[in-house]
Length: 108
Image (tube, rainbow, N blue to C red; front, top):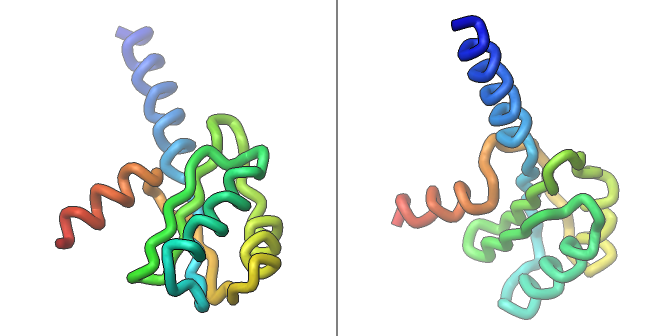
């Protein structure tokens, strides 16, 4: 029984770390799919980035970290501003890119 509790605790710890592995960046200036592709391409080049989702309608970029990596907020902001866009805010979110996509679908 103790072994089952231990395995469950380790599993939950892993899920909680994965749940805090994304950043939601609110960005002004993105207006077209070309904007989205440019931001996505520049952020995917970062070593710690696993996935990127650009939501033009809501003016947000979701960046998910690779397993075992930590996102660098300053570097993400620099990549976006160097691409010509204004970063309004950055926050840590509990969703992965896939989970955020599902939430968007559910809202439609």
